[in-house]
Image 1 (cartoon, rainbow, N blue to C red):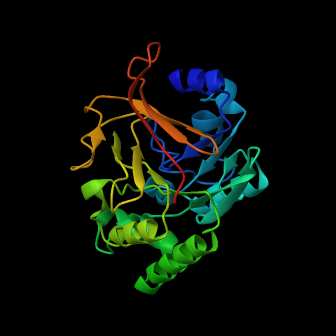
Image 2 (image 1 turned 90 degrees about the vertical axis):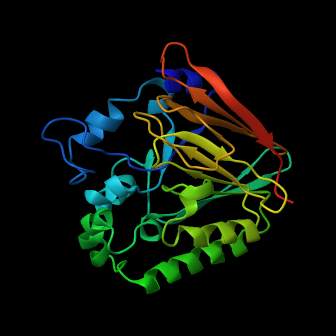
Amino acid sequence: MAMKDWAEYYSSDFIINTGDSFYINYDGDHEGVNSVYDPKWNKVWKDAYKGRLAEIVWYSVAGNHDWYGNITAQVDYSLNYDKRFFLPSTFYVRELYFGPKNTKVVWIHIDTNIFYYEPSNPEKLDMMTQLKQVGWDTVQTIEDKLKWIEDRLIEQQNSTWIFVVGHHPLVATCANQYYMGSLRPLFEKYRVAAYFSGHEHNLAIETAKDGQPVTYFLSGAGSKTRIGCDGSDWGAPVGTLGFLHTILTEDKFTYEFIDSTTALEPKIVYTGFFTPRP
């Protein structure tokens, strides 16, 4: 309700979906989706969101719970059934030009699951069958994907704004997981404006500062909450449900974390802004 009202008030252009699109939601349910015909497409997504949220595109990345199901079906659904659920690949790039100056903004969407879980991690074992099917079960694959990300960042250095979206957070201590720590130096070297994530069920931020030019967002408190990332510059108290709303202009990026714990009385609990990358 609160997110729908916010989207309608601001005439939002799109949703950034940071993954874990399909959990186990009811008795007898399964993780992720099984196929493009899975009833969860309607029950959990199409029929669950109304108004403006049912009209605009959801630019998505894959979360671990998506991989526990059939991630290929999510890509297939996006490509062949409903492009509003936008996931044409688990790694992809979007370029946009807007405003009177024809300002360029790029969004790089990445799959962080291979960077987050060590091979012995029980959660990764649940994904191993699918990872093997796509050839993503080796350290070489991790190195190749890091190279892919760096190559895309190099290509986009003429962009006024560069944003990266992944499922797992890089806020403060949450970056200390397997190969996740390899992402921050890349983002900071190539002056990414911000990284957006979910996974941890909390609202939090690590702001850009001298020597660290990237703002790291965590917005994973849409349906449940728990303790967030130690060392964040701000984090919502446990029990705070909510979402992140942003406004991008040619010269300014404004963000606000919304507490929607009481759906009929949402409120802004933290806000800020930053300017384009130097």
